[in-house]
Length: 179
Image 1 (tube, helix red, strand yellow):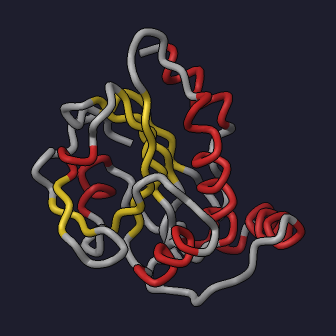
Image 2 (spheres, helix red, strand yellow):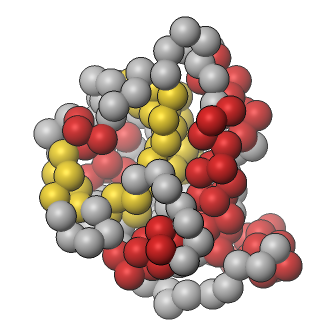
């Protein structure tokens, strides 16, 4: 992954289709950005719900910390997460995968889609009460997490190598405290 700067004027959309400039969503000193494969991916949903519940405990010392999730597709699944699962952090769509392109996280999972640990992540999410949703064209994407500053600078990045490969929230907290 290439650490770089994501353009603040990059145009995304909220789940209802309204345009959102990335810079307008970067309202805290540091923002944890989950790069979901797609919003219906079970391990992505589970990590997203955990991140949403953990935002108050993400501490970066004297600065403020926020969170958001960016996916390439499935606005209806993002709406479901917001409306039915109560996710409050911003859920944004980037159908052209421009954020992934800028940060070097666009490579598909390829054969790692068959990794047994990915199947285990799906099974764990099912046991935890998450239910399958429609598979989209973005199913081959890698999961990932970024920490962006207000200017869109990438302060930390993690790109998973299989389905459900997200860092622990403790690893994210450590990355936040290092910046």
